[in-house]
Image 1 (spheres, rainbow, N blue to C red):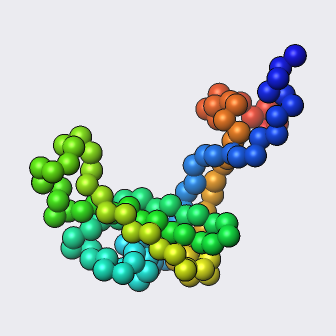
Image 2 (image 1 turned 45 degrees about the vertical axis):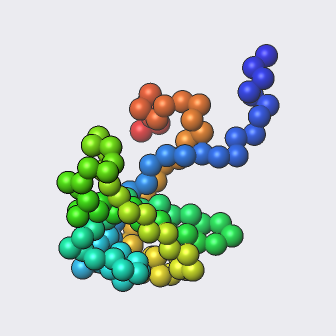
Length: 118
């Protein structure tokens, strides 16, 4: 008997795609919500959104001024982490037109699925 069959999977993960509203962009979101964000110095490259007891938006931005520096691993990108607490979902969704995501339990690779009821 498979001992994992009786376990309750409480977490699923996957990939999400976000489309910003017309005339809105990820960079504009950063400029409006991140204190001390400067487009000339930073290039936003990743967004993390936590929604639970509170909303936490984390922006990872390439630090262009340190990209040529020598005090970090040359195989890594020097990024500044901006952690935004106190935002609410309407502030975040004001920039987002739509999002689409697929989550899975991790037991099977989504690329191995074949939909049979097309």
